[in-house]
Length: 417
Image (cartoon, rainbow, N blue to C red):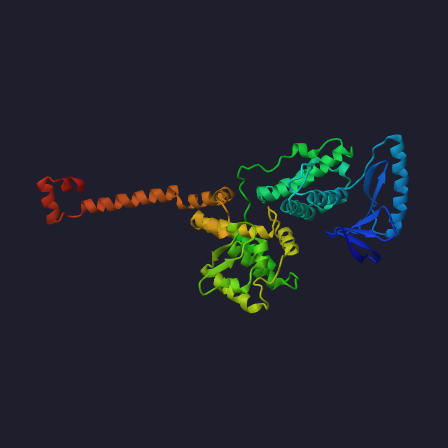
């Protein structure tokens, strides 16, 4: 689906419905990838759709490269030669178009119909991958190796939930399956990269020191950001509430009841997402400041801050990917580490089933239990204290009452020793 006529880099044409691609007017076989401005050939040769990067952002150069590429492709097609240099970005474009086709078929269709929520999940997964692996997008698909993909996916596997990881994995796997079908690649690298299993994987959550460092980096006076104050308030607010990003975007000032120390979350993802989240006492000054500092009905001053989080992640060289959802995990983990009941935390997070909370944050509960267990030194100290107190008690002179009990031979007398 294309939009109304617009301009891109001085060229008139139309954008795709999702804004990723741009088609110039009166030029067939050309389109530009909006994120990079690079022009691509897209044409049908001998019944097969050909897509490849023309490696230029100049329309005039792209026209010449298109004409030369079409001549070469037609010659190769006549000779039966397969030499497709389509980039990953070109196949991502194909996949997004295929999602629209499958969405139009309906969820129950027996030829690959898709539910709107599933299509939205896969689009979000590809958008996340594009942010994490920009260097791979302009690379020919046949040149992308298993090691290239693992370098990206294995780095984020411990950080993302199983659902989020698979939302990235499944579209990419489909893309490479199609490339294999079109004989662009000889083997699918995803045959050797497993999906995220249902088994709980311990998340890499920022420690308290790392969280403090993140907030300090956001507030760094040397960091030039016109929305610095808003970003710090937004991130700290997410960490104190555990809200999903969509819930935070919908939160109104009227939903934040500071006198009663509660936030009314409107929800949206599940029936359980509509809930009340407590306002902890240390967070009261922050929420009072946000209410007073920013105009309008909405509580949080920003929608997102992806660019800033990417900057902080790189600056601090964090061993995990930093995103808005990280601070939801921070909230849950710290609550459990402080001994909060897991049923209460599950309710605060808006989980439909406490097992989701249990499986997701098992590591946090284990860490809390370890903190409660006394160390060897503490056990030894308690035993020494007990022995000292008992010996002092035995060395003390007996009272008349204790002497009478001993002489009577009663159970209480014997029990005294």
